[in-house]
Image 1 (cartoon, rainbow, N blue to C red):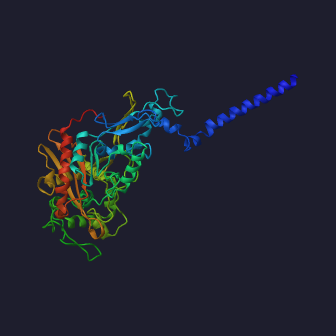
Image 2 (cartoon, rainbow, N blue to C red; image 1 turned 60 degrees about the vertical axis):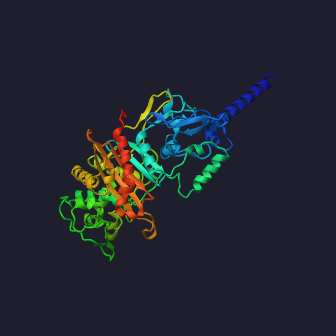
Image 3 (cartoon, rainbow, N blue to C red; image 1 turned 90 degrees about the vertical axis):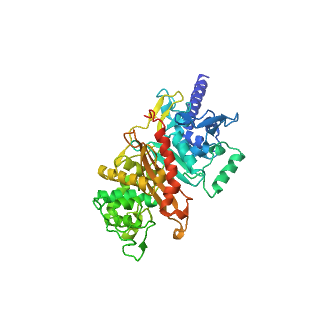
Length: 490
């Protein structure tokens, strides 16, 4: 009898061991597959079972959470959703997350281990209260950019030259991310409608679309030519014909402005003479041109702010005729508005380019700081002496050239207009560009650099359309930054 009891006890022990091994296998080895199983709603219910952390502008939230009382309890809400959509993106129960909502999802959803008050907590999938994301944006600058576009198709990017902080990021037309927050039939209809819209309101034109930069790229060409010693005196004749025959072709390049033949670089920049800059690019050479473009940030496929930015490009595999067109922002040269804001910022910052960023810091729900932006990498795009000369040239454009609409009383403003042709046979309505920087008379250094592109600009204004359509928007953004207190943003 004792032997049978012993056998039964041993068998029960084996069953217990098998049960423990199976439980460990399910909870440790196979847990990820159960978590990812479409039939398992516990993760989703948990994700939406608490309010999401907020995204802040000037320390005020532009997002929120609405208690629906349903299984997926909290839905995302947005304040001034269309104005901030290129920054926040959306957080949808049906379609996932984009932009900051995606890049900072761990903090906002409460799953980032750094949110845990103790190092051993929060490592088993538990959710802490959602943290907050404090952006670098200035509300006044964002409002000025959004209202300046006034529903026109285009984009605005503004940065602080000395730090790389993004002060404004606007894309138009836009949309309200709240329309995608839930999971009902209205969300499905909104998603379908937004994706059918030929104007692509969900496209972030400020960082995800590249345009031919047109004459605003002449800032880069001038920097390359000055650094290479091709031009040494801004007021010496440039020996440039008008029209200019592209090397190895019979194609003649002309100008929108008159009197561009053999003009000095100062006047060529002021009145945006295509012939002068095309020839300068050829004389500078593709190697030096590409090196300078790369230093400004072109051909960088890894830029994140923290979400990814489309690569701006300058083609180094070109012949001399193609190089001439590339040097005036045509052919294969493409740039995001953020990239062109970086170009203007480099001029304003003594030739140095600071990597742009959008998140100042992340915090716990209590307000305690989790992480800060820290020091940003710097590149030398051009010599400081070259940057000083380019400052002169850009100020001349605003004082008496094509950019007078950007002038601000009580401030020093530098700018460059541009009109970029596009479409089959250049038949599309030209894009109007304006890049600029500004320094208040009491400021020690420039406070803001801006790039504006308007896709539906007045096609009859030629080169000056950048000054007519885009410059007033840039002026409004720069004024907003100069007038607003800087505060302690470190």
